[in-house]
Figure 1 (spheres, rainbow, N blue to C red):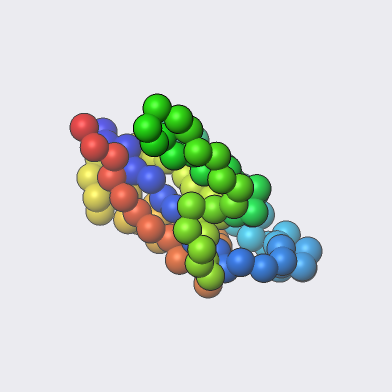
Figure 2: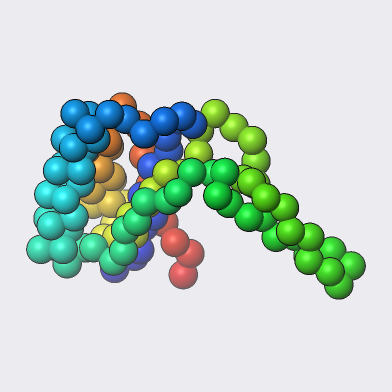
Length: 114
């Protein structure tokens, strides 16, 4: 079984109102329960806004510490799920369910190396 990263990208801005967010959370909880029941769930998590990020760069034996995201953009990584799947088609099926749960946000499916 390979592991896959399902990344959720979201626009910068405020958190959606409860009437929108509550439905998304219910769908995500159901999807996570199905992933766990299928033995495909490894780990999942949401991230704080990019403004909370700290970037570290090694240079000349020193470490430069910078507040804020690595890159400026209109979208950022908002959350992720790591799954195991027998092949890309199975991972894409789970990714499609995740995309449905967080619609209209895009979901990227990417295999881990090794």
